[in-house]
Every structure is written in structure tokens, then in C-alpha cells.
Image 1 (tube, one colour):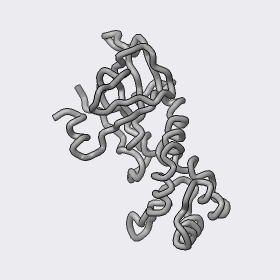
Image 2 (cartoon, helix red, strand yellow):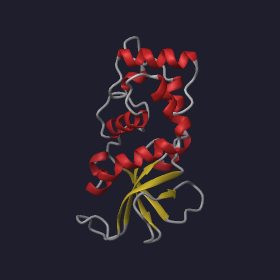
Image 3 (cartoon, helix red, strand yellow):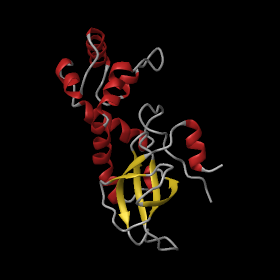
Amino acid sequence: MGMEETEQRTGDLEEYAYVLDYLPTGKSFSVRSEPIVQLIGENKFTLLEAVPKTAEIKVEERLYIGKGVRDKISLIKSRLAYENLTEGAKAQLPLAVSAIIKSQEKKYVDFFNNASPLNIRMHMLEMLPGIGKKHLQAILEAREDKPFESFADISKRVALLQDPVKLLTERVLMELKGESRFYVLARPAHQQLPR
């Protein structure tokens, strides 16, 4: 069973992705020199490596990578672990994650509105860097009065809270780097199997 078949069954197949890096001649240590694109999916922040159909690919570009006819991507080669990204892709990653979060504001505002306890000691919202018991209590009280409508609304109604986009971005990066036991926003870090 292939990677795409497994993901399709679980409903996590990425439809669109952002270009993190484009290597027209492939990786320097690779035996074959084929062009490579490193991508991040916008649904579950899946890190992917693909073969492009064209050289007309730009970093930060949003590409269709779903099951239908792809105009710029020929083949999704594999999922990647964070450590297998190029240095250029690693540098681009925070910008891409932030852009994805901003482009899907309703989804992530709903995360603040609907997040629940993970266990008796910890709440999902406490997984965000900088949110402790006081911020958690303030968020829960504010959303009980009225659900949040936007990132600006969260910032306005919860005193001294950092930018929600920044908090979410930092959390996604922690998850992609495998620095967390819990995965609440991103797909678990991919462990490559030995070949």
C-alpha cells in the first residue's frame, strides 16, 4: 500500500502545498540529478518531496498536489522529516506555516473556540508556547462569553496574549521538529525507514 493510499483512507491527503525549496539539479549528494521540490501541505503541514513537471516553480508558490491533474508536480516522492529539509527550506518554513495559518483564519480561530482538555492536567491551548494557566483561564472565559471571530478578536479580548498567529506558528514548528509528545496541529513527524 502506497503513501497516498494510506493517507487517502484516513482523509489526510494534502490537496495543496507551498514550495519551501526548489532544487533544479536535485540534491548535491544524490546519485541521480533530477529536479526536486520540497513542499509543506496546507491541510496537516505535511513535509513532502516531489518531482516537478516544469522549471517554472517559485519558492512560496502554492501548488495543487491532489489526486486530479497536477499542472506543476509530476510525482510526490515521499514524506520528509524536518531534518531532511534543505537549509533553504528550513529558513522558508516559518513563513510558509504563518501564511497557511493566516489563509485559513476561520479554522485556527475555531481551534481557540473548540480546544478541549488533553487530560486532567493539561488543556490543548496550553500546548501553545507562552500559554499558561492564567492565559488559559482568560481564553476560556472570553470564549464562553462569546466565540472568537478572528485573530484580532482573540488579541483584543485576551489581555497580554501574544499574536495568535505567532503562537500557532511556533507550535506547528515544534511539532514538525518532533519536539512534542502531542500533535494537535500538524501531522506527526515522519520517521524515515532504513532502505
